[in-house]
Image: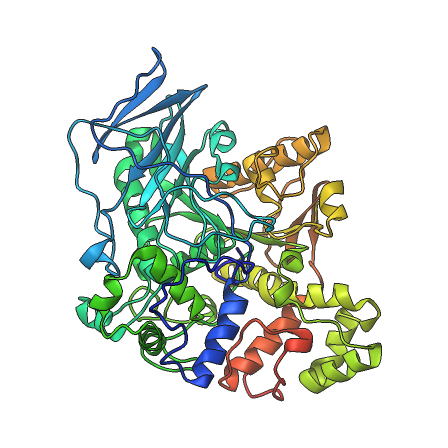
Length: 586
């Protein structure tokens, strides 16, 4: 789930075609790189999906009188349902099916239709693998299809020029769906915000680059199809949301995990400029991604990785790859170590994220950003195993961190090694990225609001999952009784409901005017020179200087790796590479 950051728990590779040899065509180095990337970039339990089939034009359910809601939008008329004071529309296609020869092409806007299209059921999920049933994020995955580019809308009845929040689901860019029950937009919409949730292509179907595909492209690029889907969905919103009562000039993009990472890439993407006015980023990262045609910092190019994958699947051409059934292709690519990541292609993404944001080339929009205290608790494969002794731990840290070792040991001491290893992993990925985004936006006069979610409850603590990755989602959406089957249940008690009400207030007011406020809760100051943040722990608490020195510590590490042409990646603490001495510019 973590932002395109990990693979899910294993045990889901059940559909590998017998004629495909997973690692054929990969050099030993490429296999090792693919394995490490696959383990580290996709090792997340994935948010669940309960899905139904796409509705078709002309199919009409028998509705009770007053039960339906019909809107005539520029794209055509849609019929949804009236649910209390909301109009709800599900499964509206925003792009044509990316199937057959259209697999691995930019999304094409759906054609306008005549008649009334039924929009009362979620569309199918994009093709993905099942998650391990023991995962805390496991959900039964319903129907899946390559024809999955649809969106859903929760709108207050009678809304006029209402703020719009577009939600991008998480799932490591390998899984997830807009119909996840925790993503129900009703509670947010009840506060006067129109909520839109979207599907986008996943895995190898969404993030595969290849020289043949680049040659097909008018821009000479390939690989960012899932991101292009999100951009196309935002274009659909710009054109049509006014018919549902929304203000197309006041759109906030928001997401958690891979959805948050997607928001950061949309902020960096020139083709997305002007399609949104604000951004919400929950548990993202800013790790290095491949360049399209050039190896950099020891990371092979995206096209080279694509060619190696094609060889491992015994595919002589893109046409051969397009002929492989979608689920078989997803399974085989995952088995071969393919890890979906966006690509610096010079068109959709022009630089690495850290470079784009420090140069001020991103969308300079108001930002709400943060992370949880237990980010790494559900991802044991990312966290190093403890050393055999305190002395062994300290020796290994000194070997790896050199002149920064004492700072590391003071921050992550050997006395509580398991907790220190969890914290170092969390800070190196989500903590650093969250504060860096706040720093960068502030530097270019865009207000940023930083948060730290440290709230937990008895069931989560008993499971060793204090404030785990994504645990803020039920509170943000007011879905305190709608979560995956293995999720530690949130108590149905006043304290939990009060915290949820406050978070809903902050999120919806930010979507409304860029200032997070909540009734009966503290004012949330902008990050600014005081480095302010909001702590969510039982009740909201405004504070300043989150984890003093943490951001500077990780920033120094990243700077040294960048300046010496090394990848800044997912290895921290006992798994960290040997850090170079401080080069010029750090």
